[in-house]
Image (cartoon, rainbow, N blue to C red; front, top):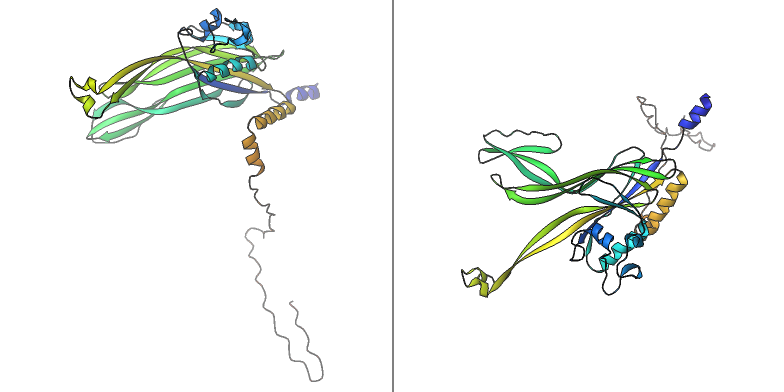
Length: 336
């Protein structure tokens, strides 16, 4: 019984390779309600050709297997990875998709994996008239107190970008349960009285169950990007009343949706790890070639060392040989 218990405990811990693709898609009139509505009513068209051979392909044309129930404001679908990536490639050819990041992270079962693609933004959270400068800390972020012109300013650094937290749990029949927390922070307008930028925060948390190597698509995070363009002849365009004759101002509003594709791949044995490593090497031939031609460090053999505390022996000088008697050859001196 003890031997059987030890065999059950002495197993290789199962791991999950989580592949994440963060893409920003520009929405048009056909897809202004988001990717989920476009998949439902078949509004995807690429030029004069339609994907899947029909003018309005249903979601199953992209390999959709099921629609997942998630938190409010968040849309989730489960797709076959190859078919949905083909749809993204079609969108990329139409200059409607921007790949933000494509990280990969390896984690053990029931262990939280965090992917943080963001920028630390300094924000003034407090001001106080003083001449003493002291450092401080706040929970959840880094805070520093600085003195400027006799005023203490508390600066807190916050992350602006995409933060994804995934905790995988492996089932017995090839299923993977994922606890997903998605956080998207963007830099907003400056706010008085500190004139620090505001942080626009969008957060969603959900739990889904996928098959091994199946892709989860999270969407529904839509925002409007406002771009102001001021063009014209320098100095002339700034003349009151007559400046419009020498330049123009344009305000463009662009609606974008942030998609996040999550693909779990279970690694249960050393053979699975070797297969995934080989696939990664094939996907990056330049890196594989650089590793092959990388300079190797020469192997050094450890030298015999004296015991610690023992002085090294000093070389003994050779003693000259005594003069030989007449009629006899000289003798050689040997070290003792």
